[in-house]
Structure formats: structure tokens, C-alpha cells
Image 1 (cartoon, rainbow, N blue to C red):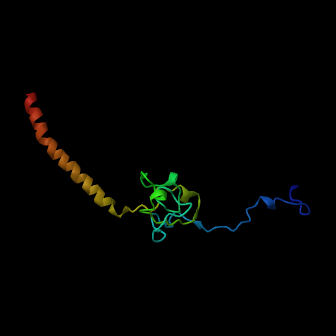
Image 2 (tube, helix red, strand yellow):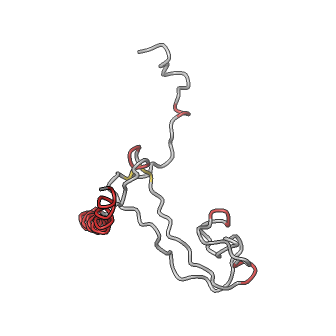
Length: 136
């Protein structure tokens, strides 16, 4: 055994993470985004976002446009809380920029771009003929 593995003296167990380990989510796991946690509150709650009234974030993190008078002062149009899912991702899962991308409509998107380019070329063709005629 190595010199630093002395079984009688205290070891390095204090440096281990002895907390309960969360299940690690893979790259392919689905994370719901944009879902609401339930119906909106009817009155402003202490500690909520001063802009929209949701409890899941503060005013500096709010994605709604800044109101002239926030939900804290008006008590009107309070938004519902967002659903927050606690997931521990692995290394690739944290850095996956294409997660939850739906590639099913990609072919339709390419066809629409091709149609647009054909229309653009057809619109340019008469102008090109006129320019060629002027050059002679």
C-alpha cells in the first residue's frame, strides 16, 4: 500500500461528496420548458417578481417586457409560476445546443427556401435582359 494510505490515521473521506447523488440525465432526456406550474395567483405574493408576479424568478430575470407599473403595485395580470425541473446533466448534456430540436420540418423549410430563390431569380430575369439590351 502507498505511504499515504494509512488505515489507522484519518484519511481523505472528508473530501468525498457524501450527499445523496441525483440521477444523471443524458443528452437525449426530455426537459420540459415553458410549462406553467399551475393557475396564476389572484394577488401579489411577497417575494415574487415585482414585474409579473411569478414566484419562480426575480425582476432582473423576468422575460416579460418591463411594465410601467409592475404587478407588485397594481396587483393585476399576475402571471403563473413556471415549471422548474431539477435535473443533473452529464458533461455533454450541459453543453448540448441542439437539445429538443425537432428536425421533422427541416425538409419543408428547405423547399420553401428553394421556392423563394426561384421567385427571386424570376423577378431578376427581366431586369437582366433589359441591362443586356442597353449594353449593346
